[in-house]
Length: 168
Figure (cartoon, rainbow, N blue to C red):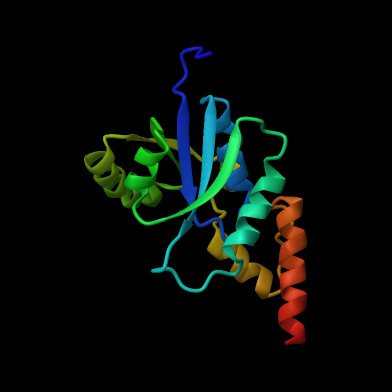
């Protein structure tokens, strides 16, 4: 039954690692759509990720297990192709600061040109406006406390990953 909401949206990202900011966007987007697909991007242009694709998917699944309308998948290739294959009506992107909009706008326009799918920008909750996966990893590996910035399942896996790296 459609209550006026668009049926399906895709929230793409590398999620390496997923942060509380990502989870906030997921929860808010899930309230707007009948189905939200959190799509973990396999991006060969980015440097080696901290977590495997499977680990990232598992962490997100653990974090969203209470959201019945959220599905977690991964994809390779063009987002526009994936969105079309999924018959999604909207691409979701979270924005933390103005510079995020500047970099995401051209991507949104390209995706619209390729797939005729609009991008919906959700502003970050101010508590997470400074949080990015890369800064979380940097602070964590330099010994800082990032527990307030990532969901518990992510923190557990990060600690396990750090312990593994110390023994090798």
